[in-house]
Image 1 (spheres, one colour):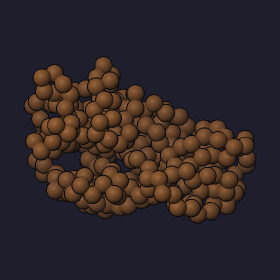
Image 2 (spheres, helix red, strand yellow):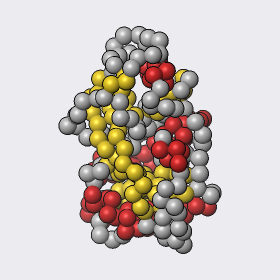
Image 3 (cartoon, helix red, strand yellow):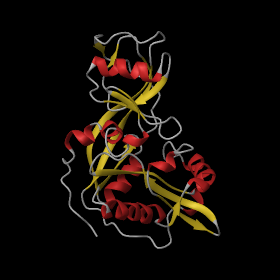
Image 4 (cartoon, rainbow, N blue to C red):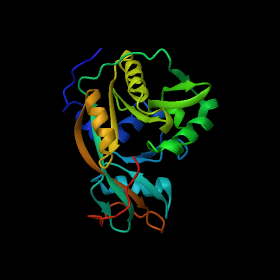
Length: 255
């Protein structure tokens, strides 16, 4: 069933979705100190700040992860002096504005025992990061053929009222059969059943994925900068440093 959603919906919840998830439905997974938090490094390789413009939040993140540590963070336009930008890119956020959600009878629920197969499929298709315990973030569905996992989609971050669809991928030998579409619709059906609205992210450069999602009923809501940063190499100092614009990096951050 398709459902209309205001593309502007979500407000600050979707503007800072990782923080909203770690401060909300995923609080049980959060490693948190004050106004900074992150997912466990074997679950999802992102940190978040309650307010990226607040020097105190950056000081909390420095204390949380330690000196000389590389973390990914979004959405961020500026970093404090002493922090090094080592990678970056632009992400596109899309929200469900007319997706037809429906179960996929052939899809099976995937769990921890399936992680080796998931990691193999992800390594071959590169839909984005999937780590050893990413599967704990939500429901993951797969399609098997002759016992072999050939397609995958699941849930990642969960800001209040919203759930991100992620890890959408199909084995190259089985593309063109609509497997990813069926799985996206099936994952979305489960999200809708608990009263949330689906959304997702893609790299701005991944135009083929963006076109697919738009054809399914997603609409681009916003674009934002994602940075991979290294914390200062010394012990955290008191908050109060000024924020400086980062330099441009040629390395894209994987969303």
